[in-house]
Length: 326
Image (tube, rainbow, N blue to C red):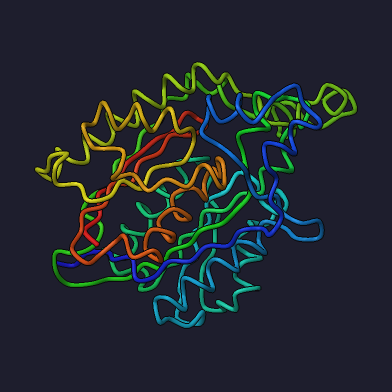
């Protein structure tokens, strides 16, 4: 049986660290308030002069080295982001150039925090049909540049970073077992950037009214994430005739520690099986899962033949899950 395997992973994180103590100086907030509600202690902020594609190319290069693949062997780049270098062309185009993947088709996809799961699902289809042989899937965000740093309800949550994985075909039982993707467009207003597109074009009014920053109904997103991430995870297990006891590691989107605690409880998978790094990086949206995966691999947690569950929910709202035999 031909399956799509993750051959190598990589990550890239800015060197600048912004702690909760740093935020206390400019916002009506505190380290205790942020940690109690989110589990976040600090996040990374991209340096001036660098862009989304810089982080993405760095993570992709590391993933290629880990996979033993040269950039010239990559024949497709799938880049998940809501913070591209510019509206046109695709951020993946700049990554192709910086990576030196001269033989690769390259395109972006936008599914926010669920972007990496959407990306590996598309890559899985490409590889199993034989259209491409080696694909790099990247999740990358520079959210610090679309945050309202006067809004403590959003700016304390997010950070910058990139993660990547090289995927290729393999014969056997190891690899992506299934992916499951969902969207409920009726909830679009719960998490969005109101202006800057064709619906509300950029104008002096939209800038003055701070409509180009992330807006979120945190209470509703919490409810939707808890319900939908749990159900998508259950579907992935049921589809493969597996139970919670079969899961070795959960590589979940690092949105909020309280959400992950709730998912663990409902899913009946101990929180100790969740690789957690939200305390260090905050919510990095599309980059969250691949960063966590690369960390878990580097730390030696993830071993051959283990069963990994990926799960996430983001703006749209879009969500999904994937089950992978490592």
